[in-house]
Length: 260
Image (cartoon, rainbow, N blue to C red):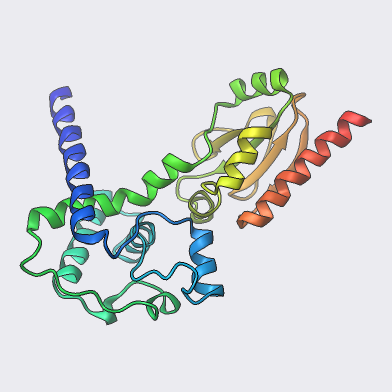
């Protein structure tokens, strides 16, 4: 069993490496890798693509749109991967603007891509499909704030006089994933959280909240001081600027308590 698992992991890693190479050779001249979602929204909604002057969707845009729009994202993962890979292969070999998954406001900035028929092998298509499928989640893992367990966070909060930011989520929560992808990877957010907070994430479908806390909605953000007292308990998903304001408000509430 262990040998089979090791082989599977090796093959997955091999495909990921090959997929990156295929992307760099066949796709990177048009499709940029990662650009934060807030920057992309600003580019298309406010500047009609005159800010970034993109010629094709970025890799994180592609990864997100493909997984959201093709098949059943909540169904069997292997089947979903096959469906996405089949769509990519068909589109790359026979591009059709009508089949594009991009939003109209985005697609109007792009020309239809040229066919790669005869220029890319089935093996290369399989490898790059795997790379694209996994790309947005790897971006989140690489750029997101780092989370700690609650007990360790509480000890650290007492030692460093910081606030615990407890994110209440579930794996299947759409707006939780949206915040992870759009907000929790933003440098300003990550920098503020790492400087002044200790971040904890709890999946309430698997684990009860500590301190007898309750949350009716996901995501919810509960801010707790070093003495285990709740400063704020806010349900909802937020954009970058609103979430930065929330973090500042939590810091203000902590300072107000300390001066009383």
